[in-house]
Image (cartoon, rainbow, N blue to C red):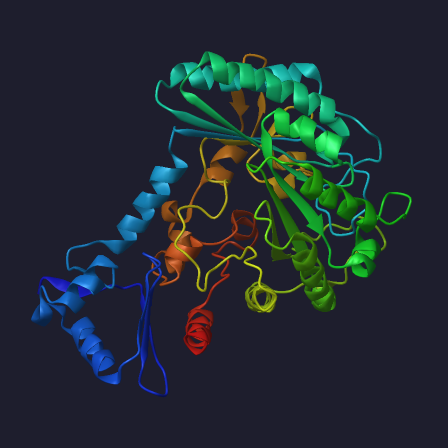
Length: 449
């Protein structure tokens, strides 16, 4: 036997006899709408060698549904993971210029002490030196991505602008560097003037959170003094849309949902589609609020208002489908099924660093409030003094027998064990997708087509 069916195949036969095939390793999706063809494909998947070099065989082989018998698919998934996470062609740096925020969101995982403090110049210099050392030690093309996070980073607009301009000069001096800038902001200070300052400093990717329509948003995302914020944020967005002629920026609007505000998300989508329809510089996505078990204030989110992972996937798909009805492309996590990934996030990337204002280095942004989870501290010359936490956070599911179930799971290529933080807490892989959800999504897709 030379060929066999892929271990990562999913196949669903509808009541009418038509067939859908999906492969989690390649992301390929095939719909066979004739019963006689569907039966032939099933036979071909069971005994591929009988159909060598036929057109259908070639399609199945080229899309990963049929593989060589000696192909080690798990090894291929692990190799793809290793290539991305150990690559030296990219450097990802996230900077928290401050952990202070002008908002008082009850579910925020960054806990501050109530006083405004910001990153000192010596830490900026150290991060600059790290980037410079990296560029000098690697002669090939390098993509350097600088992300700004907080707290609310736009409380430090001038600092961000100055640092990015230093890097722009570095990009001009070294022809092997491509610089990308992005920011996660609550949008309150993202007026048109501040937007232009950041844009001209190389920050062209913005993420702004809206917790549904005005009524719901103003319940959750208030200023420290309790005043509402929706109108100011929305006015800023409209100003950028109407006044900015540049085309090469993206503002990703993120709708954070709980069980209690799904209706509000739909109302937000309808409003956004009316006001931003056809402007591809803006998109809207929906993501669940994650329970990080941090009691920020007495008005925190009730435990039963958080969605579990599988519930979240279904809600995101439903919200996106609703958006389609209003003629908007939107931004979704899967289309219509999850696509294979080489990393869940940047935690496992050896060249990914998150710096808090004190110069502590973290692998994950959800533990920034716990200095015990720092993996090291940056030195003045740009080197990092690591501690024992570094190997804990950088380890993968392929390096431990503890994750044996993940390594043999058919969902592995689209999951990779899920969130590292949650894996470390529970001691096993954290499933977002399940075979049942994949099958259900296949059936829903078949109904649409």
